[in-house]
Image (cartoon, rainbow over all chains, first blue to last red; front, side, top):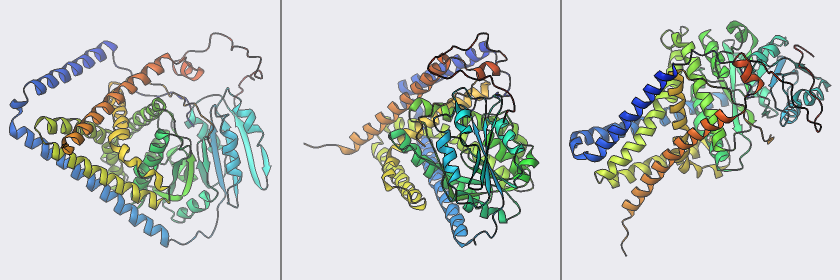
Length: 444
Length: 73
């Protein structure tokens, strides 16, 4: 669900100061570019050699990162295959917050009534919608073959508050928080619950997949969810330190949520914020690849940019809020490591990726190193194709997604990284932002 | 005719990366323009501490919206 809510971020910077900084940055970039193009010979062979070494290190880092992720994700997958089935099924409350989701809410609630789980209830909360969401929810209120559906309506106050509202009305020891534009698969709960055998596990992240694979953008996002997000969560789960419990499917132990005091409304990434708080309380967070939730991905470029912009700034806000954990942790080294990894993925890597691509290509052409450029491109492409094959096989996904890996790094990820870079700069300058509700197409 | 495939491929890579970066920056600014033109919703106004000064427009095709009551089951 994309619910508007109040960001409690630092005060916006003085507009005059913003303007001065922006002009200074632009002038510096222009001067540097003119200098590099006009006097390339002044750079000297040492500069070129240093650049080549830097970019080779970038490639090596990329390969190493992929290798580490794949290795630990394999280890976690192996652990999962040897785990025994859960003997008991605790009562579960599923919280469905909704704000202007009339297009998709009924499909979402219908999917919840088809879950193969013996003992659960659904608590749907309308966050002051104006499009008839509440009326559509109301049609589901009552008892459906042993599954109680309760529908509530409250004044608009944001997703975090809406989730807290639902959690307060639940008595179950396990709470599932999801988005109203998501659809859970029938066995999602049964698989996820098994992880709570370990009393130290406070939450389980589910596996989110894109349902609307109609155009190139949604197909690229489908590949990104499989290759870029789920495999990473699988690897982190080997250490029981998943760093983002996704909004479309998060399964929580009630005690863990209570220990954190519930969701906060002071960031634009309440799911990441909650994850960090749970880790900070010393709980473990696992990942279950068979607990699948399908979600509707944005279908147009500007909507994707809008979503990623919000994610990036939200993550930075949550990281700033919990910055003390970067050095202290909660007695475990995995929490700070997990947060540093988030900084690397969210801040360092996008900037490195953009500059590496641009400068390497430019220097290679300027100094006639075209063979090196082609070799570098082919290496990256082969690497991406191998990762995509591995990811699709692991997730039992369609192999038709694999060819999109060629476009993924040199096209899609560059666009996303540019957005992340701008979002980071705006967050550092403290510029205002709004939630920006995505229009749903009703694909689920 | 002899084709220098390496140079052609290198040029294609260069052009595609540059064009993608230009597209990415342009799309980002297009997004910012769209956001600035988007009419403010009730929640945005609430965020800024403002409230709606006027009544909601009546649309005969849709049922009249009910007043929002807090904590209504």
